[in-house]
Image (cartoon, rainbow, N blue to C red; front, side, top):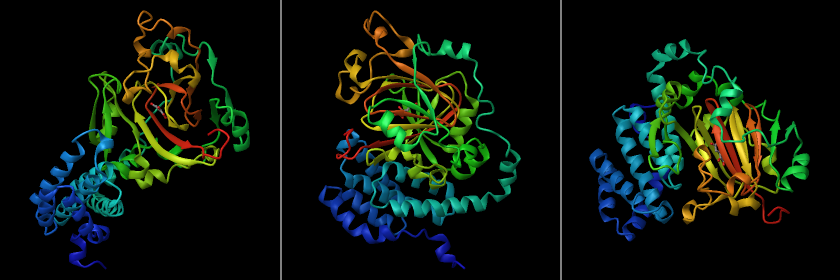
Length: 409
Ligand SMILES: O=C(O)CCC(=O)C(=O)O
């Protein structure tokens, strides 16, 4: 049985081991004030812990993300652990989870093990505290994330870009073998819809169950995008608890959608990782897995026309999406943005297309499809894609690179 003191102290063995070295590195980068605050924080001073966290946060926002020194990301994670330890000692477990999630999302890798262990502890505590409200959760056990997956094609066509679903459709293959995928699609770099290959995923039943999602992730903090899309001026990012996010999706008002987009949710929440499997297709080419991301939002989210450098299997777990694809070879005709940060995105807004501004665009050939629940879409590297959710939708993208020895590299 746990002793009283081990009950209120959050164990952070990696922090104990690495603190000295990390603080030395931070000092050598000129972070003396941070080091001084952290020394007080380690003795349980919550105000000092908050101040250190604030200082590290400022460093994380001092320039473009790639120019932030990795040591400041570890410093941020360290400060989050100190703040969390103080809240934990006070029994404020929801606050502990919030702070630790910020550490997981924004912090470096050095203290990740402690962050993950600590978040598991705090989640156990919260779940213990709210056992009474389990009834409330069970009461809505039948509540579905998406009640009805049917769509009205006439209405849908009105929301899609001009000429959608009228030209070349992406071909669909059922239960295609890895060898078939390699020979017919991967090696030639051709998109394909893959059906009947994710029936065994626990996510296929679990993720449409609101009470399950709330139970495993409700108190966790996630980053979401608010606004039409990342190319628009009014677009912003927010941090929300997963429960608040689910409520927003359910409310699905007429205003701008909230989209949990391209977030490595499965590195953050182990229970959700256990619900998915890496598709065999991702082993084509030797495989170096780059990232597994969640894309979760209401009907009407749009990812504007862009391309990525990796092979991609986009797996549709809940709901449906419309996807339009343009081959990599036609890049020049798709009006890529000139700025280096945006050069993988097209200037053409498919939802407000102006032929006078982009006269050659309409003649460019594309392929498109509706990605149905339970299907995967293979998007070859550098193929341009535009994606619009037609219902509440939850997808997972698997990005991988072929090894240098592979014929496609
Ligand atoms: O599903 C979406 O909204 C976009 C997916 C995407 O762009 C990707 O998987 O690379």
